[in-house]
Amino acid sequence: MGKIFMKMIKGEASEEEIDSLEEASALRDIAHMPARVKCAVLGWRTLKEALLGEDADDDEDDEDW
Image (tube, rainbow, N blue to C red):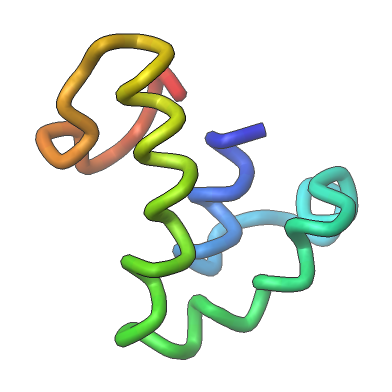
């Protein structure tokens, strides 16, 4: 789910992928507001770091997430 969310934020997700995010799809237009992207992904990056023990800032492409 985190990988799809990141694709949505970058404007790369399909409509089907966005719909699978359910309530998180409400942030779909964040891709058009660069100043808000960091805020939108903060929770996902924090969760990733907590679960995987990685520094989320070092992983730009989030391929494994």
